[in-house]
Length: 128
Image (cartoon, rainbow, N blue to C red; front, side, top):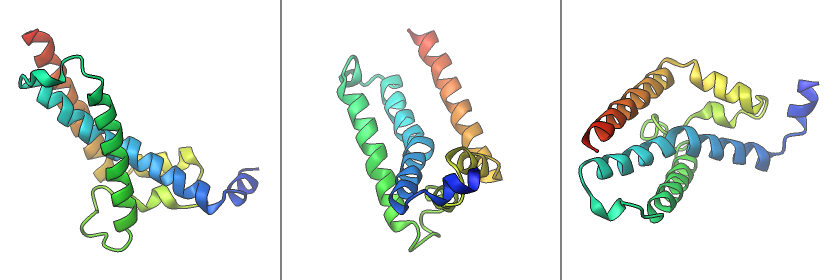
């Protein structure tokens, strides 16, 4: 059954899955952390501004599109952003995430993001 489902996946569907995974799992945390750091250091322009969410979403998508476009041609430059496993057509969406998540580099990235966001949340809560 899984073989039938993956055989029917079109190139466009696979490319969109890869782009969405790149934007969600690799680009979005970077820009969300940057916005949070700006707020944390006292940038008052970000307070209550819905443009921050729009910026993070658009920047994440643009960053992912750039990585997906240029990543295959120069993997040494985009090794932390472009993940080839996200574009393997024979893998389902959950299998792509599992394959990425079990790599030591991805685990290190996830732990770093969680720790950084946890520290920033504690500092933000204590500052007020």
